[in-house]
Image (cartoon, rainbow, N blue to C red):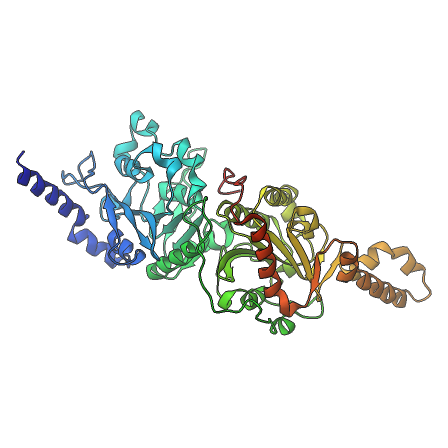
Length: 515
């Protein structure tokens, strides 16, 4: 073939790829209120930075009109906030985003041998249905490698983000389940199979509606953030990546801030109630101590008794695990245990120090919790703490009762520093409950049982003040609430001076991406 002829053919194939499924299919995508794969990529990446790969790949099976089409994946590299990332976007205008074999091969890697060397975050923009039956209906189609073990073994080497941006059944759901962070656009769906394909083990149909945003946001916890529209989804992805390193061998980027290290948190004196049975919003505490009051919630509306979020202090990324007393008084249940474990694993894998803000009456008890293996969930949470090697600092904000102290990185679970605010109360249970349990016979035999009970409650409350724990070395410090920010930053500086960086030992890198 002559040189110019070959060049013309190359340009023709690339131009056809840029046309995706054609004008009519693109218009249909827009009518659904959705962007095309290329439009999404342009909104995600910094301007003029997308470098596409795999444009010449075509489907081995013609479409319904007998035409050869390009695969339903758009893949390449670009920059987000000036940093290189990889992207795989489903093209819903071509065999509506299905995971055709060639498309899936392209998506899972240029060369399997390169998986251990991945060094950039991976973004998947999902908008597709189940596997195309023409390519999977045969024995060869079903046994062809889709998800290989080497992919799973190296999965946590780089941050993997999945955006659910349409009706995603089958493969997109598998990708989301294996991701580090999932954002879902309102109106989209994620499930094992699309409507009409649900079959029960006995062969009967099941009319259960596939997974909505509400289901995954509030019940399953398989989604980390919900976006009102695709524009917001892209911004959430950009925000998440700003807190992340490029890979597990690096620290997250430093972001300069004008927020003073020694800024006093005077608002904490008003936010934290004096009485242990009064509720307050722990997010207000977080806003008071982090840089510029900014943070990124992770699974905000799932297991809402426990807060997990990313923020910065003195320009450096931190993870925060905190009890939220607005829900169930801050008592963690099985879902909260899963949420904490998943977050700790992610932070340890990507070298993010973790700050624990404790205000808990204990664990959620009762039949529903026990039916969901509460003891196992508690111990799994503790195991993640034991294996994690990033810096961990525990701040007891107010009450800390029972075994739940340990799971919030208490003294016996390896905190690098543990401190209590002067507002704190530490015991095996509340003073009121403790008096009734420990001194029940004494109260019942007293001449004035109620007066005796009140006296014992005051004694138990006095013994629960932080000074007793500090006196025997179980606390490193008792601090003025207004100095919380300065204390945490100071202790992180000390820990950085010991090691020079916060790169973890990656003992949790091989843990599952879900529990």
